[in-house]
Each structure stands twice: as structure tokens, then as C-alpha cells.
Length: 472
Image: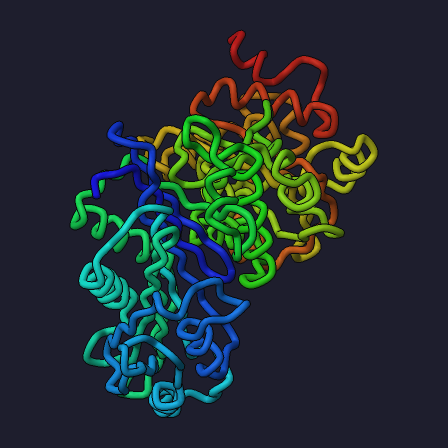
């Protein structure tokens, strides 16, 4: 059994987990686990017929099927003749047992996703004994919280030598009438399969979370998707990412960049931002979690569905992006905001020159936001806030003893922290697509950048106040 290993965990709204190893004894692929969540299925008989009966829809021979009792008490649905050969299938008793278990559900609706269908498969020419299949199924069910003493499930082992696998059918309703959660099942399935690999003497080298092709992809098609090194081709990885993004928007319905990133994380996908020279987000990159060094630009995944521009555009995905809230979810330093009260004349200049700024109005007062980040985490935030306020004071005139010009503005300028309440209640009166974020690891450089960006509209003279201060 010590052979190359590939593991796939797949659900209907697909997540696929692939684990491979490089055992130089041969080039076979090992366990492939496919996990399907048959959402919205309200009857079990069709599924039982599918896994036990020979049909055009399911390419297996009925003589190669074995009944895995699981926690059911019904007799085998496989009817034998005098020669102990399977001659017919009758799933009525099993179906009745499953329907009885389903009717224990105490929730409001019985039309939900109350059944689960999982498949554990081996690659061509690989084998497991019936006892090993039983252990594998029991471990999977236990990990998915379908406890042996509190749930109902059974299985069908298919002994085809070119594609040996087991189907596991479960009722998610417990004997106490509660519904077993399906949350994070793909992660749990991955953990189980790694345990099985250890138990069966198989070595795992790489783990990745992805889906290859359609849900009904054949094993031959899967192996064709690998390049000569046994890795998934870039085009297929981008397809995986694109499919997970589509799933997130269809089923999770995120409203913000943070919600989008969190939902992708649940689906096994990482996202991070590419930052521009002024701290703005220029784009995003994606990767499948286990492919640690392989990031793909959003535009290469899908320019209309995965690029940063398409994510925040109102006519595309329309996700809300607020740096102070969302930057940490994009792998950027946390953002904090300060606000400076400005005059109507200054607002007019900002609009006239179409400058990068966010201007808000609250209680008839107009304020401009300044966003700051600090990548170093050893700075006391109270001291940092005080330093930033001092910097803004020097620039905008409240330090009258430093600049003569500040005297005429002293009564008009005020500076404060942009609190959550202010951000929620204020009205945005001007905003550009790019939000400038100033890195304050170097306060002097930060001051020079703010001075440069605001000199046009704040009413300063041509000589930088910061430069004059430094000269003294």
C-alpha cells in the first residue's frame, strides 16, 4: 500500500483537497476522497438506488457491490440467489428507516439539506479490504460529527478493480432531533484522510485545497490535469480559485472585502493585496492554501469577477472597501484614521483639482480623513496618535507658535481621532477611488508625504512647512 498518494475532497458547492506524495517505488496515485453535499435533497430512495443498483447512470456491476451496514439496522438491500449472486436490489426497508430518522427533525422546515452523500475512492489498480473501507467510513463519519450512537448511515462498497470506492449515505438528523452542522466539512475531511493515510502506511508530501473540473469529472480526466511533475496545471488552479469565488458570491453573499476574504478562507483560498506607492490597494492576489508559493493575480483569475477593481465596482461585485476595516483581511497593516476640520474654500480646491481625499460632513462641519498604518507592532498606539496629531497640527496651523501663518487659521482648524461613531454617522461629501494610506513607521517621511499631498489645497505657501521646521 505504500504508494504515491492523491486525495481529493469535493462537495457539491465544491471544495477539493488534494494530497500527493512522491514514493519512488512506483507511479500510482493513492486514495481519492470525494465528498458531496447533496443540498436540497428531500428523499433518500433515489440515492440508495443509485449506489446499490446497476444502471446506465452509474457505471458499476451489481455483482461488485457490498453492503456496509454502518449504524443502520435494516437488512442488506442486495438480494441473493441460490448461488449467492446478487440478482436484485430492494432499498425500501432502508429508505423507510432513513425517512423515519429524518422525521425526528425538530426544526421549522423539513425541506432542507437533511441527507449527506460521501464517496471515498482509490485510484486505478489500488485496493483496500472491506474491513479497511469500514474503518475509513467510520472515521470519516465520526469526524463529521455523525456519531455512531446518535446518527444513521450506511454504505455501498464498489469493488471494481479500476476504480474501487465506497459510497456513504447519512441522515444529518440525530436521534435527539437536532441537525448536524456541515460547517467546515472539507477541512475535517482532509484531517480524516491524513489519518487514514498514516494508518494505511501512505506518505503525504503536499496538501492543497482545490477542485479540478466539474463535479462529475472522471478519474482519467483528473490525472490528465496533472503536469509531468504531478502538480496541478496553472490553468486548473486558476479555475479552482474562480469556482470558489463564484461559490462565495452565490451562497455567502458578502457585502464587504473582509466578508469576502473570510468566506474565501473557509473555502481554502487565501487573498492578499498589492500595495501602491501611496499605500493604496493596486490589486489582489489569490492562492490555494496549500500551494504556499503560488499566487495568482486577480486579473489573471478573472478580470470581471476577481480583480480588485471588479470587486469594489458598483456595477460588478459592489463590495464595500474601507481600509481601516478591511486592510488586515488583505494582509496589510491595520489602518487608523485621523480627521482634520477644513474650510469650504479648502473643500472647493479639493474638488476643483480632483485630489485624492475623503471628505465628510457632520453637524455642519466639514472634515477630511487621513489614513495611517504602522507595520511595526512595537509602538504604543497612544503615543503614536499623539505624534500624528502633533504632525497634523504643524501642517494645518494649530501650532501658532511655530508658524506665523497659523495664527489666522488657529480658530478654524481642529484635529481629532476619526471614531467609529463619526465614520458611521457622517455624510461623505467627496471621495476618490484611491484611498491614500500613510505609513508612519518613519514620522518624518510621513510628514513630508502629507505636506506634499495637501499643499495644493490647504492654503500653505510654496515652501513646505515641514522643510522650514527641519531647517530650524
